[in-house]
Image (tube, rainbow, N blue to C red; front, side, top):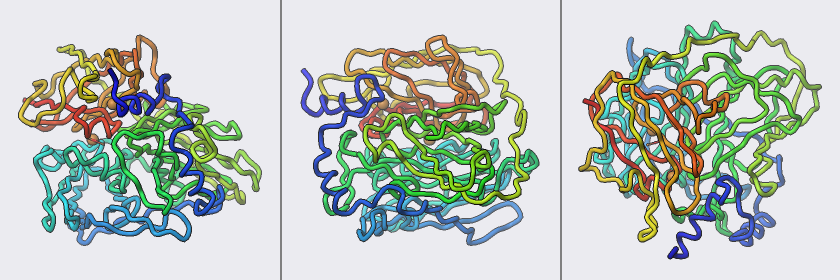
Length: 474
Ligand code: C2O
Ligand code: CU
Ligand code: CU
């Protein structure tokens, strides 16, 4: 028998997995919208502050950040209590150069422990945010990132055991971009024309404060873009690189442009695609990224283009932001033909199965029939071995989509139920969507560090409830 809470879980992502139920819980939101929510497209897109190193050496950029509570101006005239890196919502953007080391000293000014994880980083276990590596209140920890991996859009976020769902939801996430100087020659848009677009939802109470309740998806019906609801962004009539990042706990986005304008996907989670792919639409589950190039120069100045989420049930969850096309400018950027060679992970030596599941007794989401236990190693993998994992979301129980995220490496997605995957899934991935009833095959290799790396569902409320496991690289 499902308890009420489990019924809510079911509704959470919907039976088709992607639809967003409208009814429940919208009443108080409506009231909030009447009083405090701004008109659609009335606030400018916020460009998150760029973190500045406190010190630079020949090899390393040193940063300092404080994890703290703060107030953020998310809704006009309302101060919303948040948790933020340096008190910002979302956190500052770290710009790393490939091959240059970054050390971030994170000081915990919260009254509870925190752990920081760089999502998509090929990071030694000691800096990866392992569940026992806690920063106690008042203490700090230095996280070391070597950036010896392909240029990519990563993000950092809280990873505190059992608490990360709430702490990310309250604001502990930020963008981390690795740039390869060699890649600049490819001609992709850069500088002001290379823009992170972080998407997430949130639940507000009537006073505009964030309400967190585990797995209560249908109440989280305000979508924020770089921390603001339905902003507008004035763009020049030229090409832009948009780094689309889904930092939601549970929400899926299917993103397209209202004018039907093509987007060219140039990169996935872990770096450039073997070949750019024109698309009308990109579907991102929580944690996934896609870099797209959009040519606003194909439109007349004055054109207004809405970034539409096809999974949205109402205006606020559907019409996410608006691009207002301005004047025509000289545009030297281009979409390169074939940016990188396809990564060759070689022949697989090992094949494994991973099963997602659900415990109707406890309402817990499961990984291979279990919830996470720090003392238990769920698989042992030899460093350098290429493996194929068949990840199945076929368990009895609620028909809910999940996804699979691996720490410490990227993988290649081979197929989904034997079918070719979407264009943005053809590059290196660290998070992949697995609908209910479906099996996704990925090719995995850990070739750098030894030790214990987590893998988990990145519907982060599920992970916080235990839908997580660990691989020991030996
Ligand atoms: Cu982005 Cu273990 O997570
Ligand atoms: Cu991660
Ligand atoms: Cu899940």
